[in-house]
Length: 226
Image (tube, rainbow, N blue to C red; front, side):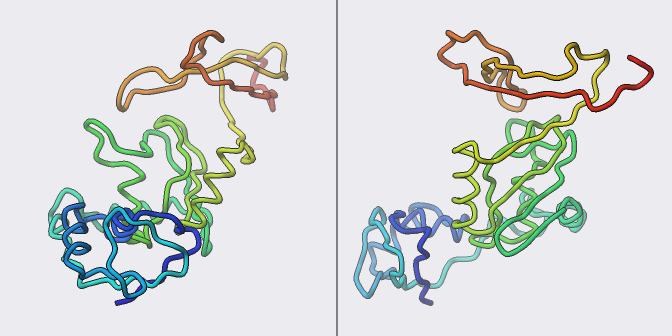
């Protein structure tokens, strides 16, 4: 089988290219296939750490089956998991997947967290078919989670978040009347806690772990003047 390297994959290491498509492969397996000459790029041998260029033809040998995901295995998604994952979809096209993440569901796994969005993405397939996370929402935050379908889409979305081109709007129900009813909060934040209990909290400006954060807020409505 021959696969051509995509433009978005230009410069990627051979071993990482294989692991993206077949996550169940170990580094040792990829190294063995490369060093034995089973893997060829444009007809030539290549080292596992060798860099690929866009448009290069990669000859892929038969890939071993994923024996870690047999029926009943902890990694295997149940039909109920797949239905739940698909029920979160609010928008999908060839490049982007948007999920309505519910409160209480972690985006990524951690200690004692086996059910999370990253695991549920297996409902769309593995390797290149698996959507890619480009940002996160806290476990206790519900809202829209954007994912890239393929390396190029993920790269563009991640870049938009990194350059702060993505606009985020949060709605919250609070006790009491905010005074003033609208304004701007300029307060640095830092991550506190460990594992599944991490969250962002206000920080001192001199704290080296603090990150700048600006939030514009406005009160949309009130109930019983409370």
